[in-house]
Every structure is written in structure tokens, then in C-alpha cells.
Image 1 (cartoon, rainbow, N blue to C red):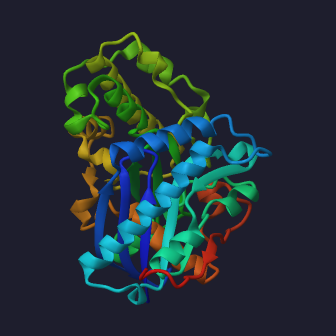
Image 2 (cartoon, rainbow, N blue to C red; image 1 turned 60 degrees about the vertical axis):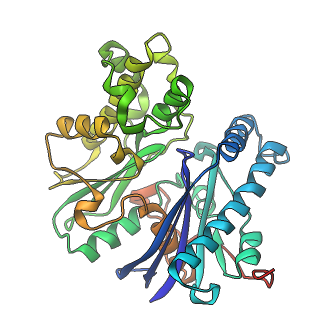
Image 3 (tube, rainbow, N blue to C red; image 1 turned 135 degrees about the vertical axis):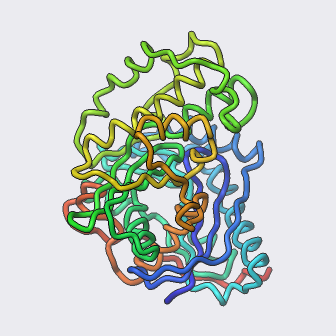
Length: 371
């Protein structure tokens, strides 16, 4: 068993999740301390500017300055999150064997064999005094995979450690939505379903100034425009067979621009739900339950819509004793251990990579952690 710390910054741009686990990188998982560090408004602005600059960033061009600046700030923010978590847990850097540092995705174009997660792994290793694994997706994408989703192997380990033996679907609703289907009779299967929180968050920020539709309040005051929803669901992505993945900007809120703020929020929320539900057409079995992780499970309007659309069996991760906000941070701690041991991080049935694919870049700790 190795004690590892995972850091995750999702496409929802809500902040940094940090979590400690003990694991062998296979079936054994034991949770430790965790915390969430919300982005400050100025940090969120830097990341939004980086995302915009990355849209036109070509492979043969140097990194745009907006992206480089965001990367520097992001790395420091993650170092501070590590220190805060260690202090809360009463641990020292020597008590942690490795950090799994996902970084922030600013560009995801697997069709061009390109994905970019910013974050300086070497700098983080020197700042924390702990070995760091980052760059988890590049090897998969370079080999022809989608590089996403990467959490399914951890979902499988988590389900096994909980004693789940029947078919189960784990739905993650972050900036993008994705499904992991775990069955004792078939291979692990996973894919992105469509928008998660990103469109809803952007709409809420534009119309209320809040970074999210808190408690689904904006959507609760509106009505779903079924004609707009039908047009949104006509996108070819939803009928494409997995494996498949999305960029945060694969969909835009333009289709709801003519709607009132509440109706737009309700329609975008329904879009997320319908995209998830449509995804189950690509699942070979019938899940006994649908376990929801990620920030979307905090939105009661979204959860109510999802439960109705899937006809029950929808429960938050906490009902299984999991930490729904921490699953992805825990996953990158788990994947860092797998990377150290040369184990695959992705499979043909999760990312479409031709064969089980190891990955990650290891950065050894320096000597300035106590400066």
C-alpha cells in the first residue's frame, strides 16, 4: 500500500480538489483526508483567458502567454493546496510517496492527437518536496485514444472495495458528463456523454454573476424549451458509438440565447440530463443503480430531472460511503501509483486506445519544500 495525494482541477473551473488515499494501485483503496480549495475570482479569470487563448493555439506555435501565466498560477495554487491538506491531516511531505497532479485541461483535441493539461509537475515536486506524476493523458492520445475518461479504473477499484458485485453505472457530472459501466460479466466500459455543468455554469455566471447555478435556483424558476432541447440533441455526437470524448467547448449555449435566464438554465440542465440518458443506449446491460459523482449532484433540479428520466435508482455517491466531490482527486492519486508501477491507466474500452496503455510523467522532488 502506498500513500498518495491526488489533485484535480476540473473543467467546471470551480477550484482544486485534493485527496489522500492509500492504495496498491489495483484493488485496494483506503481513503484519507481531503479538502477543496475554491478558485479565487482572479484565478478563475486567468483560467478563462487561458481557455480562450488555447482555442486558436496551433501545435507548432509557442504556448500563448495567457496559458503560460495561468500555468504558473495554477502550479502555485496546487502547491498551497498540498501544504494545506498536509497540515489538516497532520502529515509531513515525507509521509506522502507521490502526488498525482492532473492540472487544468485547456485543450482537448484527440482527433488531432492533441490534449493539453497545464501544470508544471517539476516545479510542484520542488515546491512540495514530494515526487509528482502528471501528464496522464498524452500517451493515450498519442497512441490514438481519446485520453478520456481516465477515472474508470478507479471507479472499478472503488466499487470493488465497496463490495458491489452487480452491474452498476457511475455517472460523473463535472464540466463534462461521463459514464462508467461496471459489470461482472463484461469489460469495463466508459465514455463522455455530453455537457455536464459547464454550460449551466457559464449561463449562470453570465446572468447572475455566480460561478454556478447554486442549488439549481435559476433553473427551478424556468421551463424547459422542448424545441430547443430537441435541436441540441440532434448533434451527431449522441448517436456515435463509444469510445468518445469531448472538449469543454464542444457545445455552446448559443441555442438558448433567445430564452429568458430561468428558461435557458432549465433547458441547459435538461440538456445535460438527456445527454446522460441517451448514453445508456450504448450500454450493453441494465445497471442495478446509477451512482452520481461530481459537482452536478449538488444541483437538486438536475438530480430530480435525472432520477425521473432514468426512472429511479439514482443516488449520490455518499449513499455508498464514497466522497462524491473527491472521487476524481482520489482517482489521480490512484493513477499516480499505477504510473509508478507501470500499470495501464486506460483501456481500449474506456478511451479507445489500441491496447492497455500506461502513462504519466514522473518528476522527482527537489530540495526547496521548506523554503
